[in-house]
Length: 345
Image (cartoon, rainbow, N blue to C red; front, side, top):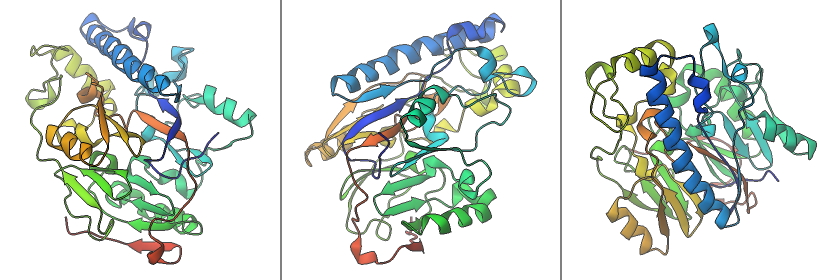
C-alpha cells in the first residue's frame, strides 16, 4: 500500500534507484563509455548490498526497469539523467504518491511499471503536471505527521505557484516555511522523535524543532571517490587521472547528472528504517556514538559513485509504505495553515 507520514516510522516498502545498464553506452566513445560502465558496476554492487539488507529485514524493495533506451532519450536524443534519485521527482504524502516535474520530452514516466501496478490496485497515484504542486521539490520537503517543512530557497524561482500549492496543502497540514539553503535532506535528517542528525550548514533548530536534540557534523573532509580538478575535469573512476573526454561529455550532454557534491554531507543524508535503525553512506564516529547512546543503530553501506550523482541514501530512495498514521507531534501549534518558522542558522 501507499502510506507515509513521517521519515522515521517503520519502513515497509521502498523504491531504490538505479543507473543505466552498460549496453546503453554502446554508442559512446570508449573514453566516455568506460567510466560510465564502471559507475554502473559500482551501482549494481553497492545498491545490491543495501537491497539485500533491506529485504532481509522484511522491507519490500522496488527498482526501476529498463526496457528500451528510447524511453530515456531527451533533447537531441541524448540520455537524460538515470532514475537513480527517485526522491528528486516523487513525493508520498499520507496515502498519495505524486510524480512531479519530469522531463516532458520523455515518452513516459521511468517508474511507470510500478506506478501502473499501484493504479491497478486502486492506490492514489497522481501526475499533476498542470497543477501548482508540480513545482514543489520533494528533497526540500520534510514530513513530520501533521507538520510539513518546506524550504523556500529550493523553490525561489517558482515561489508563486508553490504558495498556491502550500495553501492547498494547508487544508490538511501545518505547512512550515523553514530555510535550509537548498535540498533539506542534504542538511538534516529527523531520525526519531526528538532526535536530529544535522550537517554544519545548519545548527539552530530552536524554532522549527523546539527542544529536539541535535547532533551537528563538522565540515567534512574529502569523502568522495571521484576527485574533481579545476574546471570540473573528472578523474577516471578509482584514480586521480584526468579524463578530458569524459569531462567534455558531462559538460555538453550530462551536466544535470551531477550536482554540487562538495557541499553535500553524505553522513546525514540518511534512510531511516525505524526509530532505532538508520542507514547512511559514511560513518562519522562521533555521530554514530551519539546515536548509539540514544538506542539508535547506524548501518553503513557505501555508495562509491555518490560524488558523481551527488546523492546519499535518502536521495536514492523513496519510502512508499511506512507503518504510521497522520499524527500530530506539535499539538501546541494549533490550527492548520502556512507558518514561517525561521531559525537563526
